[in-house]
Length: 394
Ligand SMILES: [Ca+2]
Image (cartoon, rainbow, N blue to C red; front, side, top):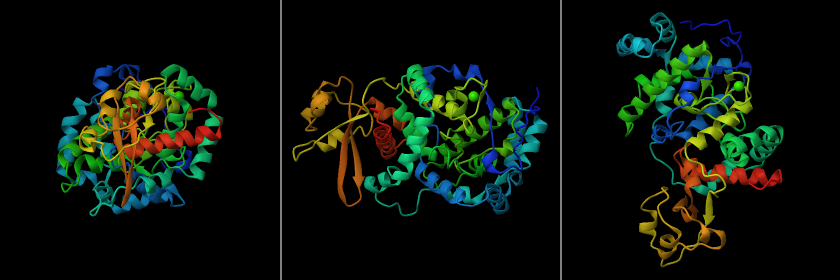
C-alpha cells in the first residue's frame, strides 16, 4: 500500500491560500446505510460559536504559515505522552496504517494548549441572545458574499437541488455561516488540533470522556483519509476542533457524506466550491431533508399558552398542528395545513422577551449540521436574505 503518491499538492511550506487538498472519493464509504447515518454526531463539535471566533482570531494574522508556526512553538511534542506511542502500536494494524508512516507523522504532531483552552465552555457563559447572534451573520458583507457565491455557482446549486432535493438557499446559508464562503476555513494544523483533543481533552469539561472518544475517532479517521489519499496530513488546516474546508466537515463527515460534484475524480472541500455544494446537499439528504417542506412557520403565543409542555421536547419536532394549537401555540395560513410534527423553538434575547418559531423536520435537519437552534435560524435567515437579493424564492 502506497501512502505517498506523486501528487504535486505537497503543500507543506506553501502559504495557506495555495493549499489545495484533494482526497480521493471512496465510494464504499459513501454507500453507508442511512440507518447508521442517523446515529452519527454532527459534522463538527457543538462549540461552533467559539470555533468561529477562534478561526477569526487565527485568520486575522497576515501570513497563515506564520500563524501555524506560532501554534507549533506554543506546543509540545504529542509523543511526549507514552499513551500516544502505545496507541500508535495498537492503532496501526487496526486502522490498516503503515506503522512507519504513522510513527513519522506522529513525531511531528504538537500538543497545543490553546486548543485545550478553546474546547472548554466559557467560565461565565453569557445569556443567550438571538438578536446579537443574528447580527453576526445576517449582515451586509456576508449577504453580498452570498450573492456573489450564488451567482457564480448557480448552475451547480441548481444541479444539487435537482440531485439531492436540497434548495440552493440552504446550501448557500450553510457555507456562509460556516466560513464566509471559504474566507475563513481555519488555520490550525488538523494533526495538532485533533491530536491534542484525542489525547489531551481537558478533564474539566463536563463531557470530557465522551468528547475525547469522539475526537479520538476523528483523529483516526483523519489519519486514514490522509493515508488513503496520499496527501500529507501535516499540510491540512482547519478549525481548532478539526473541521475542514468551505463546509467545515469533520473527518468522519468527509468520509461519509462528501462527494465529488465537479466530476474530476477527487473530493476537494477546500478548493472546489462544487464539491462543497454537493457535499452539503448530500449531508442534508442523508439526514432526511424533506424536499419542499418549509423550515419553520411564524407562531404567536398568549398568556394561556402551555409553554412548559411545548418546550419539553426542545427542538425535536413532536406536536401535530392540532396538539400544537391546542396547547396555545397559534398558527395561521399554510402552517395550519402542515402535516408533519412541529417543535416550538425558543430563541432567547438576553434580558428581552424570547423569539419563537414553529420548527419543522427541516429545521431539525439543519440542527444535525450543528446542534443549535440559534445556528439553524442564522442559516435560514442568511439563506432568505441572500435569496431575496438574487431575487430567487428561497
Ligand atoms: Ca471534485
